[in-house]
Length: 222
Picture 1 (cartoon, rainbow, N blue to C red):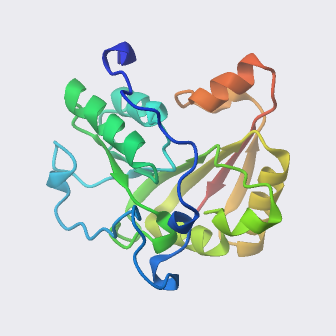
Picture 2 (picture 1 turned 180 degrees about the vertical axis):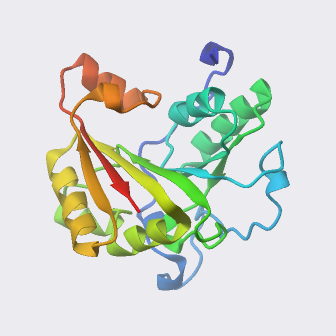
């Protein structure tokens, strides 16, 4: 168990970042200041101390406590977190280095640019947990969960691999289920019982449980 008190954040982590970070670089007239760089990873030993490739993805890993706890509980997996906020990525990697974790790393990146640096059919599990709902119509374009996102996840997952979704927002759950069903690529299981969701608890999920807020959990199997 990690003692997170040893790792103060040091600076406030922004909840939102520039709107341009949610737009593919190819659609922007020029590279904006503060835009996450594109990644071209050929040597995973530069990211993971054990030198192995990732087999678990945590997309939108936030402040990373889920990622970090998952890594400590599953030392045979390599988990890669992808996050838009550089302050969060820096903090996660500081904890990883401080704890000497062999099997975890976070990268500053925007998934709207695809994840071509991940091999197809190489990932066992993808987590996409408690995304920002972006409720206003004019902000829908900032949602990472699109038909392209679903195709991307499908291609990266091994046969039998799973995409795990969780949200406390009913209309986000309905939106995601609609797109998944329309894709006809995954079989879907709705998880009603938290006991069947055998993963570390996220900060957001803990808040929802304490406040008795319903959480919608879905497993999408390739």
